[in-house]
Image (tube, rainbow, N blue to C red; front, top):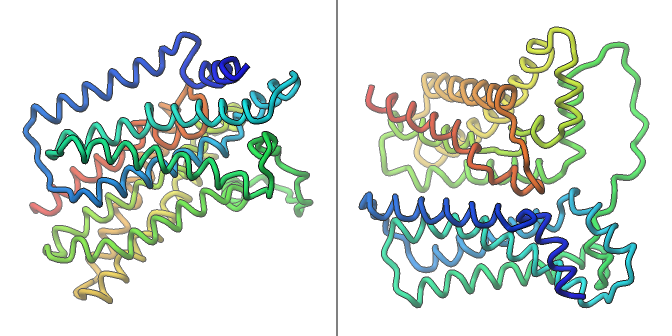
Length: 339
């Protein structure tokens, strides 16, 4: 039965014939070989390698366990007679395999390609990733105070609170409610603010005029707020049926993302001023420009190229499309620094 439980979850994640897994591993191999042959070399301490491997794997595993999309799959298995321990082990094994082979493998492919590692360090990074997956699997049920299979069942959202009625619909009001209803989005935004506080220590040795735009580009990597249409197909269908759809939704959505990016950039500028100093009006204007351009790019991608065919929310958070806008902003930052 344990094999059956594993296959039910694994085929949902990887495809009926595991074609998604094969495709992902092939792409990881192509990325590794391309970077390795390019001769790029970056010095990374083994401790940083282990930390990256463990932290990234733990975050992806927690997202996978928390995904609302797993609820229907678990409900189907609960309808059949099941042995609790076998179901839990199979479910964790399937999600752990998904985390390690489709997400962590991509990160390690890049890190291993751009730096030289011994066999022991490579094995250590794999073991740290595996340990992180096991640790999250043990900690996750404790949020409900349970240890049986039902602890891994993502409860449906409870009754909605009664909200004040408004005569006119408002995209801005909806976005604010959506953000407050999804606490993980707020957590991710708080993480970006923490990164903004740390960036001056990492980039402070370079001239502010050329390095600040790089920080603005990095802080545009706030994935959750940039995939609201992709993660909710019903919302996308409703939005596209609105009259004057582009102006009605895209403009407020762009301003919403702009506000989120600008807040992180302001935290970055304040941290730079406190640690290094030298911030002037030009830098504030540059921050606003980068925030607006990255917001506009994210909205255009969501409107014209929404992500399709994803399995669970973690696929959205770690989709390669998330790097398009930050990469474009990094190129722009390089041009600004040269000028």
